[in-house]
Amino acid sequence: MEPQQVTKQPVTQQAAKLRTFQEATVGKVLNQVTEMQQAGAIDLPADYSAANALKAAWFTLLATEDKNKKPVIESCTPESICNALLEMVTQGLNPAKKQCAFIAYGNALTLSVEYFGKIALAKRYNPKIEQVTANVIYEKDVFKYEINPITGIKKVIEHSQVLENIDPDKIKGAYATIIFTDGSSAMEPMTMAQIKKDWGQGATSGSSPAHKNFPDQMAMKSVINRILKPYINASDDSELLPINGTEQVPRTANSKVIDIESEVVQSEQ
Image (tube, rainbow, N blue to C red; front, top):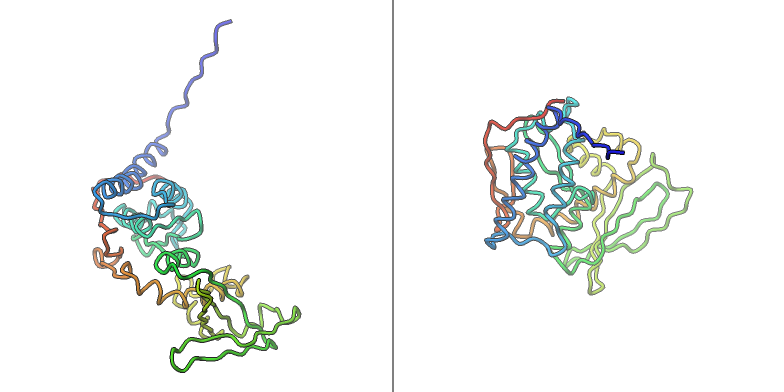
């Protein structure tokens, strides 16, 4: 009996365009990062793989839509996609680890650093940070804290809570705590009014399903973001360089704007 021949399925036009677009964005960023590493112009964490992060980012982009439910790889410019991917790599983030996400503002794709990513960045910038925790304060909880009048550092004195107090509709506030390697700590509280104002600054203005269904989790994210902000902004990577008046990437030795040809073929839906 003659061996059966395997016929390859023809590559569809849509798949070919996707491949072209991937090479012109993800592939171009990876090549640029490789050149920068070889030239000693970029210093990535030892346990960070730019190739793996970019692969994860590509699959994330394929599933990401803008506010009009259109895929961002169609609605956003290739230049903004490249710069968002480059910003992700220069900060050593990976969307597969829930450290960052991609958000479209008009036709520009931007990188949003999630609170897992902010914890990773804060620990990277300040190795003395050992742990970051957050707790929710409910009505009828006993919550007391003190403020050092000299340093301004806040410290929880008491937080007593019983199971019956836990009610997503009765959240009074939340607080985050940083524990340092020397045993010291820092705490930052927020009232629910402050948390809701923080939510209002986001793309969904606090009206996303996550905010409605899991307000306790989103409240903890807000206080973690707040307490980590000084540690991240105090680093050298906090200086931002505007690109075309809208996008931003860190202005450090790890950053470089990628400019690609405008005739890149985008994918069909």
